[in-house]
Image (cartoon, rainbow, N blue to C red; front, side, top):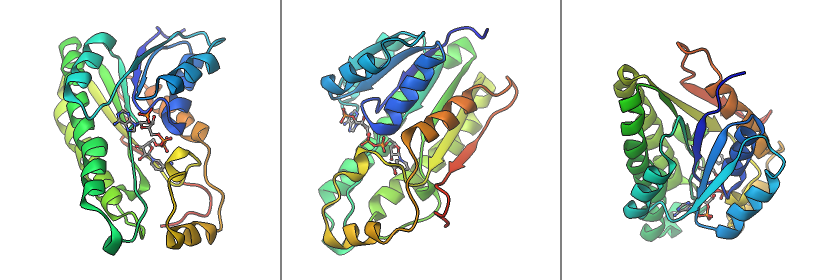
Length: 240
Ligand SMILES: NC(=O)c1ccc[n+]([C@@H]2O[C@H](COP(=O)([O-])OP(=O)(O)OC[C@H]3O[C@@H](n4cnc5c(N)ncnc54)[C@H](OP(=O)(O)O)[C@@H]3O)[C@@H](O)[C@H]2O)c1
């Protein structure tokens, strides 16, 4: 049996991050789960109660760099970092608010860079590790009403590529999992009538968070010399 790994999962109170945390715990790994909601983390621990792998929780806001530093220190040594934080406001561009552009950029891009650098330094010192970024199919395309979110996911695609270039020599793999539509709380905030109508007209059912968790865990089980770089997982029928 493979040695138990320490897996730090951000966004673990959410749909995709929560499913990823559960999947690693179910596989016997030690999970360090983080998100702002203490209740959400407690629910995750409850769901993983009978899992073979333990789940530790550390609550905080990842846009706070001091918290990111505390998290990286408390979670060390990290074998696998899963960056699953993310936020989107669905709105037509002409009605969009610069405060929302900034919010998605700070969380989806800047906070990922900050935490990744902190954790990757420890991995580099040990010459081993894997970073799994939960990007999006919007890493290389754009849908209506999600312009600034798509821009942040294009940036994350570039970050994943750049990290791969620089970190391979330190023994660190970098993988982007790029989901299409997944049924999570990310969609709960949609309230604009035009956006709701566009979603109602959709002809395919969304994926479940467990579909993405399966892809993320599989990407970390590749042979030592194999690096899954970009794994795109779309619901059947969600074509570009
Ligand atoms: N759902 C989709 O269709 C879809 C498709 C493609 C890609 N994705 C990506 O998948 C990832 C996970 O999204 P999801 O669908 O699982 O959404 P979600 O259920 O809304 O989860 C988002 C997670 O981010 C955390 N978070 C938000 N703001 C935070 C902050 N300031 N500090 C720390 N944590 C924060 C939330 O936890 P707290 O609120 O507890 O802080 C939550 O755990 C995101 O990167 C998203 O862009 C989603």
